Image (cartoon, rainbow, N blue to C red):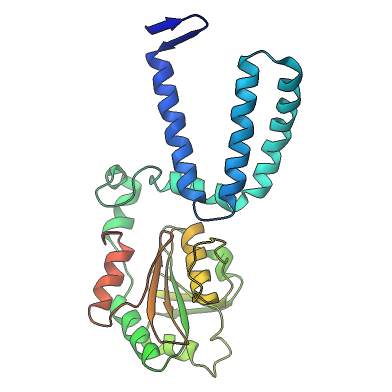
Length: 270
């Protein structure tokens, strides 16, 4: 059914739905690349695509052909340039968080997400106890809590541990004299899978200047996967949590286990 018809331009209900869906798609992509250098590349490519669309509508054949060739080659280039962003985009879709931020989401009703949201086998008391002790001695630490993925690729960059999660084991790993204290510890359910793991570093331009490599790595893994990262600063002893691309800094020792649990279950307000 046509809503209106003005010369060569006509609109139907399907056209409006089409435009709204494209707008939501662009908005979702913008949220993913926001704050990184990829945003500038995304805006540049989007500008060229809009120009090509206008030129094509005006039937300017020569310029349309030139821009069309650029678009065709550009799609291949985008797959190379935006490897990390595309991976994160697919992860967001897979987790059904494309448009909705947090809280009561329609994804909670999907069967494959029930267990991940309402159940956890991780002993947060042990993690909090280790973090508080490490914080009191200004011992740096980076602990990654896996969710839907066991992070086998990142665990493979470190030393296998396969030990039951405990505060004493975490403290011994991050002891300044331990050969495993550099890098991250990856925790899957209630087991420490590996230590001294290498993580991707966030490329965001809005990262505070006082963030060191641990904080940037924590932010990076939370951007590229659905894992949650806990950081203990070696300089100040402050405890921070990176979750879904956001960082919560200078967390109080009081109520730390509850905060970690709520953040992991994504019930904490962000």
